[in-house]
Image 1: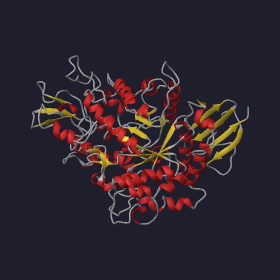
Image 2: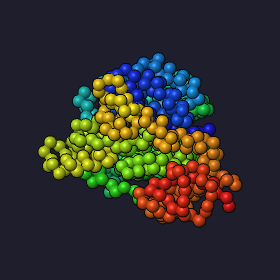
Image 3: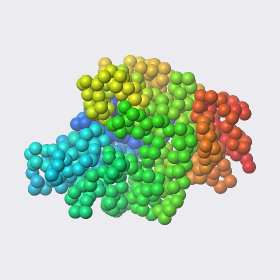
Image 4: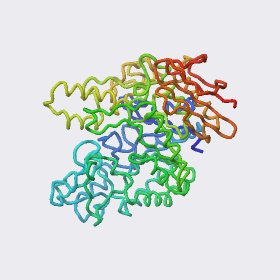
Length: 555
C-alpha cells in the first residue's frame, strides 16, 4: 500500500502556531488538515512531539509517552490523530531510540550509582587509562564521551552530551522500548519514522566491554557507527515483538551509514525488519570541518547515478526486492530549491521540475513542508540568528571568540548554504506579519523575508503556481500505476543538464524529461510521445530552462 502513497513531513515547531507564542503546536497542525488533504498527500510524518528540554529540538526525549508542553496536550494529539484519519490520511511519529535526553528518568536513575537497576540502560565506561574510553567524536563537535563526577565514569553520546546513547545490549531496555511502541500503536498511530536506526548496535572490542578507536584513516568518520554487529538481530526482535502484530504499521528507517549494497539487509522482502529506508548518498555533507571546507555540490550525472544505483541494488541479491523512501529535502537538509534549482530567476520552473523528478522516481516519496510553495534558504546575517545546535557547536569549535573576520565570514557564507535551520524557518502561509505562521509578535526562529512573495495564500489563487502544480502532479501520481510499480531506467546518465528516465509497467511506458539548468537545451532521447504534464504551457523541440515533461510513449 505504501508504494502508492506520498509522505509529507511536518516539523511541528515551524508549521503553524495556534496560541500566539511563536512556536508551532498540535492545534496549529489540526487547523491545517484540510489544506494537507486538499494538497493530496497520504501520510503525515511528525518530527518529535514528545516531552523534551529541546537541546536538539525534540530529538532529545525526556518522556516518550508525554507531549511537549509547547506543542499542547495529549488530548490535542488525540484530536489531531482523529482528524487525520477522518480525512483519509495516516500519521506516523518519530521513533528516537538510539538515545534519550539526560533528563529522562531512566538516565537520572542511571547516573545515581554503578549498581542502580537503570545503570545498564545507558553506556558507561571508565577512563581506561586515558581521558576518554576511546577517540569517538560526536556529531555535534567534540568527544562522544562525557565524564560524570558522581560515579567517576564516562557515558557515551554520539550526539550532544544531553543525548546519552541507550544500551540496546540490555534486554530490559529493549522491552521498555517495545512497550512504548505498543502504547502509540494502540492509540492509533499508523507507524514510525525511525531516527538513526542503524546506530542501535555499537561496535565492541573482543572483550565485549571496550570500544575500538576509529580505524586508521577514518578518524571522525561517523558512518563507522552504523550497521553494528547486532543491529539486524535487534530489528528482527522488534518486528517479532511489536511490528508483526500491527500489520498495517508503516516503518521508515533513517539509513545514515547504510550503503546501497547493505540496504536490503534492512528492507529485503523476507528480512522481517523494516518496510523502507532512506539514504544519505545525496544529502549535504555537514561534518564540523565542512563549515570552513564545504564539499563540492553534486553534478547532475553524480546525482542521477545515486538514484539509479539505489533503484538497481534494491532489486539485486538474495534479500531482494527491497523498497526505499525517496526525498530531496527534510529537516536535516537545506532547502532543495536553493540547492538544485534557481529560485531567483526560475522559481516556479525549478520548483516544479524538482517536484516532477522526485514524484516520478521509483520509491515512496517524502515531501518536506514548504517545498510545495517553493520555500528557499533563509539569509542568516549572524551566528546569533541560528538555532541549530550543530551550527553553534561547529562555530565554537572552529571560530571561537578570537577568530579573524575573514574566517567568520567564510563560516557564515557556508552555513547560509548548508545549515539545517534553512528547513526550519516558519511555514509561509500568507503575507500577513510573520508569514501568517503566528498571530503573536515573535517567532522561535527567523521568518524568511521573502514570505511576502512566496506563501500559500498567494499561490492558491494562481493557476500557474508551485502549489497548484504539486496538486496536479500528486493527483496524476495517485492514478498512475506505472509510477508505483514500474521499472526505472536512466536514459541519459552522462548528460550534464538533462535528467531523462523511463518508467515501464507491462506495455505502458512513461518518459520523464527534465532540463536541470537555466539554459535552453536539446534533450531528445530519440522517442516522442504525448505530453501528459508539463511545467510549461506548450512544448517544442527544445527544453527551456528548468522545463519538465511527462510523456506517454507509443512504441
